[in-house]
Image 1 (cartoon, rainbow, N blue to C red):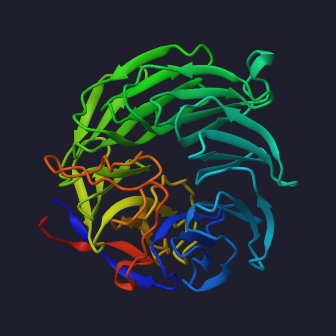
Image 2 (cartoon, rainbow, N blue to C red):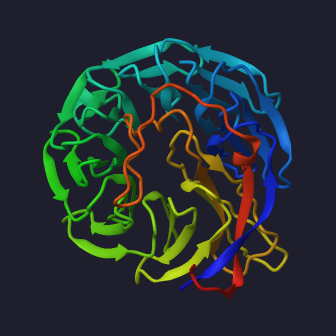
Length: 421
């Protein structure tokens, strides 16, 4: 049935729900973006707030932390670059005309997606738009970037893949801004996207309850994964296996090359809204306010993490590997998926670990608020089976009670076992 996990630390400096978090590449700092319109930098050593990033005029939707700079985007239609040492705003990126959903920093470029139906590429140094990608007929949700592959000159500058609520994904030539391919086949909004850049393959998940594999160079649909009974909300691609989390309360594991389903992970009592794989363990977050750890090979449930009161939409893990008794640490970093209105918890490494296993989970809990997640398109797909969808107005924002804003907490496994309730 699985053991439990307990929270060691809670930091509640934000005055609104936390929508996203990002761990620095060296694992020393954590960045959180909040409903209160601010972002905060935290030390993962002791949980103290190192810097308060103020300047956005509306809630922060997404953030990314690099070694020397932090990036945030907001419902105020802007993106900001911050100095991680002083908290000073270094650059404001203006150009989008609606909520900026997501940002991605790669190859000294900044990519963004927005409700204004566009994606954009920016110069990180100058803060100016380098390319504008127009063609989607509805809001652009998710982004993935493939750095310049060893293929024909037409895509020598790399490819950007975007997913939209218009039921398509598009492949763009970054160098020219031209649409290279439109990936058609889904009959619902594309909620999630993962990219196998070396294999030139994209995997998309949709409200039509399918996962689809595409050749991003030719635009050909390679295969369809059809066994889910609800919206596919999150995807993870590891070792030629695709993991898909769904509103049908399950995670399914598929062979990426054939589309064959090899395993189904159950035990969730609500939609599966977040996935993270590490070292043979599959972590899941669910609308039942619990995270779970499964053995990825057998599908057996190892642990259940309790403590949040709302749907968990984010999972961040830090790996602790001890090479010596005195506690030499090695930290790993994974990017998390987002949904507006998340309350996140801080990833703080415990002082001792005895094996190479993720010992800490940072989780995000989603209270119901006045604006929709960026991938919803007006209605939350991740709801209990048989329950009515809860319509939300896009772009509006309701204030939250202080009691709803759990900020940053830590979960570690207990040694004792306890039954699922």
